[in-house]
Length: 223
Ligand code: ADP
Ligand code: RBF
Ligand code: MG
Image 1 (cartoon, rainbow, N blue to C red):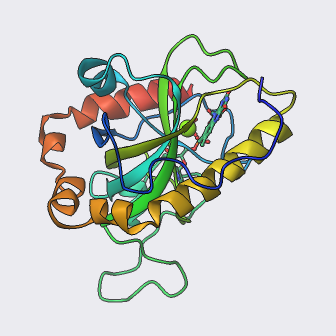
Image 2: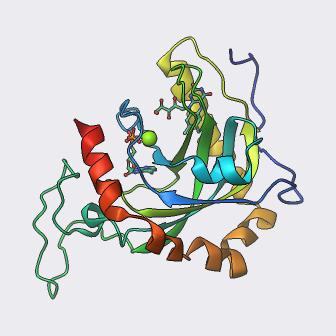
């Protein structure tokens, strides 16, 4: 259970990430548990856990922060093309010469700060480990199937059980603030530039992902 008392406003050393960080993870955005974390205002982009179990099998479960590089190229619903996965939006796109009047257009490739949970969600007693990333950015629509690169830079806290969903959400809100503040430090900002920026925006691994298989799996999970 979550211990009482105030929380530290920062996580990780002021001097910058320490071993085992930075940790690199890549994957397509897949369907998660579908518990409606979106309704709680905390959507989490889930990626497969295989990469982590191969490179860092002993990484403790818990809440972490870092930067995310996102490519919407493989994601029709996010780029405005027609899609069956986006329920909230009309799928007719304007002719390419006419700029969309009111809808914000997301860049195809972007880098954002993020907070993430790696583990078993003790509040929900999951039996499989998950990697779920809440990106600290407002997206106009879902981006299932997008390519995601994640550079984990620090650890915030262990996963806890909670007395209520409200208590869980309140703590996640604090995690978002801690992550944003911690990543704002110059010693962490450098991990979104130079060679790190090059890594965050390199999605060539997506060439080896069977996107048709992925789409089939996602459709099956929706039923
Ligand atoms: P699921 O259980 O399928 O992961 P969620 O309720 O956690 O569903 O919603 C996750 C989806 O919401 C992501 O896959 C992504 O497409 C979308 N999304 C929209 N905004 C964000 C955001 N800021 N961070 C993460 N995912 C987001
Ligand atoms: N789930 C838990 O059971 N315990 C936690 O301490 C916990 N902390 C989280 C912190 C963050 C930043 C995020 C994004 C998620 C966390 N979760 C935690 C997972 C949460 O229960 C999950 O996102 C929803 O259940 C949707 O799958
Ligand atoms: Mg999720």
